[in-house]
Image: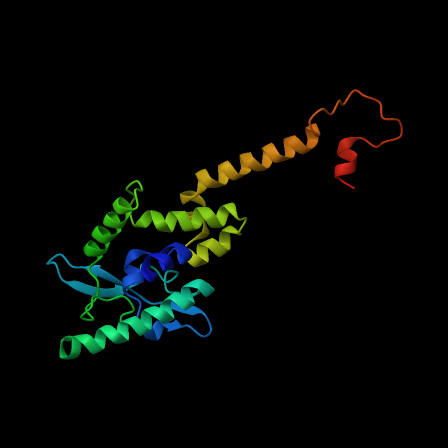
Amino acid sequence: MPLFELALHTGLRKGELLGLRWEDLDLDRGTAAVRRTLQRTSTGGLTTLPTKTRASERRIALPTRCRHSLKHHHERQRRERHVAGTEWQHNGYVFTTPQGRPIDPTNLTRTFTTLLRKAGLRRIRFHDLRHSTATLLLEQGIELVVIKELLGHAHIGVTATVYAHIRLRLQRDAIDTLSTALDGPAGYDPTRDDGNDPPLCGALVR
């Protein structure tokens, strides 16, 4: 489903995904403008609100895979609109029911949970897709400021705090890698005299 694919590839919040309209997307250039969020009201209805903060209102790049999926999704939605006829609600949302209505966030959560169960995967929150996006980006060495902009955090300190445990693990991995390099390859004996060969650490920093 393009919605879940987009969630994992961009880290958008649930309400931001459901609040996307086709006018927000430029599939040729591969960008999306995040301007609003779809929320459930206390009375059970649905409403659109501005994004959480000024930083949350942002333009993000769309991966090629998501661009293709969204183009196919657009065509499928046109067919659904044709089938629905006069029952179709023209609101411009990217993700809708077969009648064009916006998707209730609660129903999306239920669908997500059902898909996890059918796939034999452990139950996680929909919001955990967002955390997975950030974690994968950090593990790929992407700068924290880029992740902050993609996720729409107000301050880089928020990003640094939320993912501090991931950064600590990456630091440990880096230190372990450095230690392995300094200790030398398996079987290396630092006490052995190799004549004129430079010390191992000397070779590393040349």
